[in-house]
Image 1: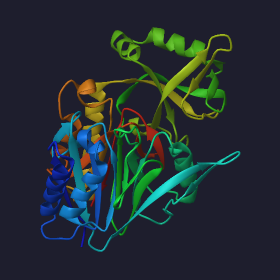
Image 2 (image 1 turned 90 degrees about the horizontal axis):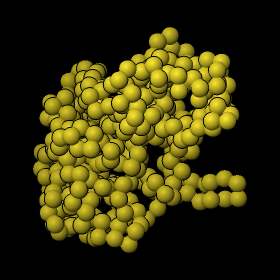
Image 3 (image 1 turned 90 degrees about the vertical axis):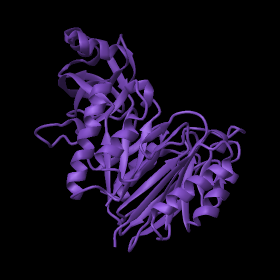
Image 4 (image 1 turned 120 degrees about the horizontal axis):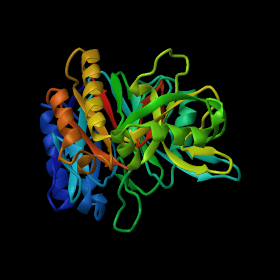
Length: 385
């Protein structure tokens, strides 16, 4: 038996009451099946009383496994709540599948960081990860997991709001945790990841010919900064307007492919440039031989790409999924698209009304080129068969 998923959202001003409302709606959608796992995203007044939110969810749903986090805004049921008080509850009855939740913590040692409590993800069908952006080394963990659990899709987002006391709110079982990361490992459940870029490529592709770490010295045998300046001058008027809103760099991860599609680029910000040395620095390590292309934020392309990426995955599943978890960049929403409910509405339309819930994250997690990475401006989604 496959998974059955239910979602619920409440904007009630009382944290406990709102949590009960949202959890009850998610439970009703399970049509009598027991919730094996619940995931909670809480915003506004819920962060003044996160313990009350957890109590409400457990009272209404009684899930044996639960994770969640504080959010700047939540989405689900076709709508987005980018501000104010709201709570979204995602619940799943997994049939023959199984969910194992965990709370991982990081400790700084003399010359390294030790992570404890992390579930072994090797051999699993996928995982959801919700880290605290300040106390947890998400990038380093994802690099490690690419080796220890190759091919396992990891989807999620960084907690994007703090409690009234200034602490991060992470939920694990009946506890509110102030640091680390929470997550859930799925076994016996098909999880299909989706990463939709919020940026469009501009200009031609370039090959890195000299680089060290995240600093690029040469592109196509020329000083990197000079080459990029020349390319920007050659862009058309619309592309120059897009680049003026913030220049990004896309790095092709699979250099063995003869052709590259939009989804093969890992898009990163441009951190700085050295006009004397002619180098640029980006927010990712780069090696000679990799292909780069300039990118820029683009609402029209983000809309097209999300539509296309979801449609491809629905076709791969052979129909609408049981449900989905969604993690949208906090810079999307009205700020990017100029209208309300864009990503939530797209999910409802493309997934034929399948239940979905998620939140606006401070950074999104999802796979590109077979390994999972941190992203910006993206919508990352985990679809469940």
